[in-house]
Image (cartoon, rainbow, N blue to C red):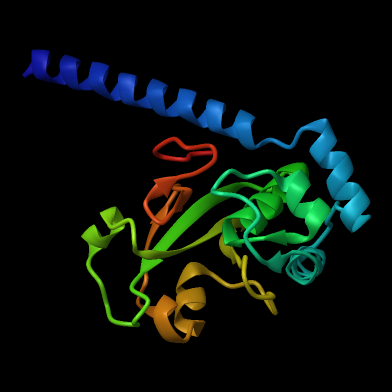
Length: 197
């Protein structure tokens, strides 16, 4: 029994150290560069938020400014998104994540996948490269995790259960995975499993 507990503690230590290293690597990859901070400041003027109203205002501004249009093949470059005012959900998600990091707000990505016909799929649809998907994230604010919308304007702060209950159509039947950035079963920036920040 003692040998088993010792092996278990070594295993848990290795898992903890590996997770911590992945977290540091990923956080370093998504932390905004000096050039990105300048570009964000130029595009949105005041990028510092003091309360939930300012978070919602900044999110609404990004939805207004970055129209839903593809400019990359799953390679995220927020400077190009801001320059051309175009991007998809995962582009807007990364812009908003970087703004949260600037404001010292904890984040965790969410990957939702679903069938386009609105029927309830299966958990293993995750491996289907033709599956429809959506990228968004949660942010931690005043003791709660809230969803940051990336395709539509936020009217209020909402939890993930409130978010999915408010959805109409196909997204209502979506499965989701926390701590994962993915695009139709292709891993995207920063590209590690799990994407722990």
